Length: 170
Image (cartoon, rainbow, N blue to C red):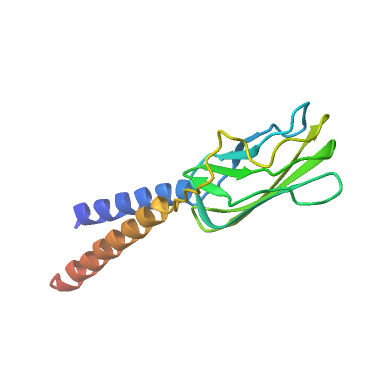
C-alpha cells in the first residue's frame, strides 16, 4: 500500500511540475527589425521569434506605415517558434508599427507590438530572395504531451481506487 501511495504521489508531482512549464504563455524573444531601431533601407519582412512554438491558426501580423496603412504583404509564415510576415513597399519615411497576435501552444492569444523607423523609404514589394510560398506548422506538441500525461494519471488513480477497495476490511 505504501508503494502505491508513493507512486501515486510521485506521479502527481511529476504531472504538476511539467504542466506548470507547458502551461506558460509564449514570450517574444526577438523582433527583426529590432523594436525601436532606425534604418535607412526598409526591411522586406518582419520576423518575430518566441521562446516556444506558436500555432499558425489565428496568427495575424500588421505592419502599419506612419500614415496608418497596413503594408504587410502576403501570408504570414509560422514555423515552430518563428513568425515571418513579408512587407510590401514602404514608400513613406517615418515610424512603422508592428502589431501581432499569435496563439501560444497552451491556446492563449498573445498580443505583441513594436516600432521601427525608416529614414529613406521605397523598396520593391517583394525581395527577390524571399520565397512567396507559405509554410505553416501547428505547434501543439506540448498539448499532446499534457493530454497523454493526464490520461496516464487517470489510469493510475483508477488502479489505486480499485486496489484500495478490494483490500479486505480488518
